Amino acid sequence: MTPPEPPDDARVLEALFRLHQGLPRQGPGTDEATAAALRGVPGGGRDARILDIGCGEGRQTAVLARASPERLVAVDVFPGFLEAAPPAVPDALFCQASMTALPFTDAGFDLIWCEGAAYIMGFAEALRAWRPLLRAGGHLVASECCWLTDAPPPEARAFWTAAYPAMATVAESAARAAAAGYAVVATMTLPPEGWWQGYYEPLMERMEHLAPAAQGDEALRAVMAETQREIALFRRHGSSYGYVFFVLRRGPEEA
Ligand code: SAH
Image 1 (cartoon, rainbow, N blue to C red):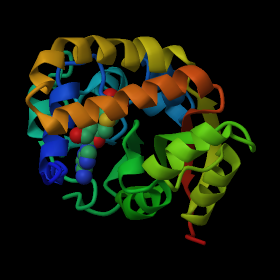
Image 2 (spheres, helix red, strand yellow):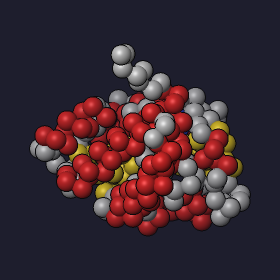
Image 3 (cartoon, rainbow, N blue to C red):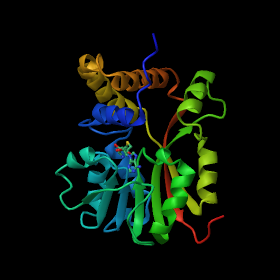
């Protein structure tokens, strides 16, 4: 007997989408954390031209819209997430685009926002790629999963070395931001409830609901098993890593 083919990338993406569609958010976070990070930007983003990258179903977009309802653009690669975007954001323009090929002119934004999605390109690569879209002195706020200790438990290190090899400490990530041409204005760590109430608890409920469907769907089963591992790891070692908001200002020079 030959072993079953591993699910291909498209089926894994489809499974990830199915797992996350309709959840309160598609990654760890809280409205309070979004609002606090926004207060870290001079003027609080009021009436700023904002680009929200990897917006998912737009939970943080709704918070950004309170500051700047008329000049906000939110992009995601999955049309299904955009269709489910909240009616609370009537004026925001949701548009389908990849973060790797954003269809916007240089220096067109005062503020770029990215919660729980910069890792897709890699934090440093994303910061470099998006910098030209900011006006001089404009701000970029991104949440990034970081080590919160210099000596992570081996089990946590092994998991993240496989899942996100570029994961770094807060200080290392700040240094990468500086090297990519930004001044670090502030960093703020997402509290654990942003992982549990904000993300994992609804996700666990969803997985229970999808368990019967996963019986006959190998990609979904694999994605759910990996998600269970991730949650179990956070339960054991969640104090050694976390999402950190980086509030950055575009500097004049790229190092
Ligand atoms: N910001 C949201 C979603 C984070 S999950 C929240 O915090 O709830 C990561 C998001 O990135 C998903 O919505 C996913 O569809 C999106 N994404 C993945 N690859 C992308 C790409 N190449 N371009 C734009 N968005 C992408």
